[in-house]
Image 1: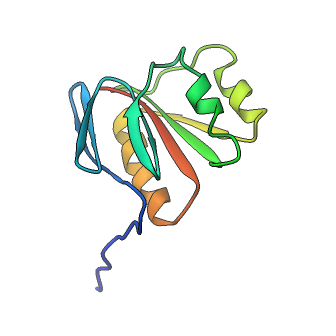
Image 2: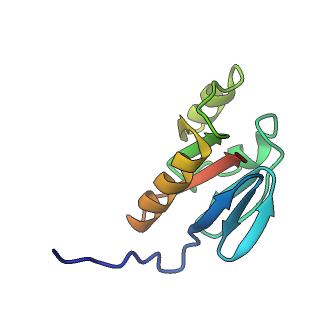
Amino acid sequence: MQITEITYDDAVPIDGYGPGYFRVGGQVLHGPALVTASGAGAWGGLEDRAPLMALAGRIDVLLVGTGPEMAPLPKGFASALEELGIGVEIMASPSACRTYNMLLAEARRVAAALLPA
């Protein structure tokens, strides 16, 4: 079996996560985080939709990590983004981190909005 190393070119992968934090490109972010191929930063959580909507035209899918377990999104959250052409996938944050890295390695236009576990 041949093992191929994953490369991300210039994109920034999620290096790790733990209770209350995410590590992205060597930077540790405490609390909710928004991660894109160009970098990561703090995010205001599910009520903070403006930075997500600003990604319209730059991403095709937004992975929403809802914490340690998958949870429903607030009413209208997904539909507002889908109207802008952004697909929304809901999952637990650990799964969102792994999925983000896989899609990033495939050069997909993806971002992750993550609530800590």
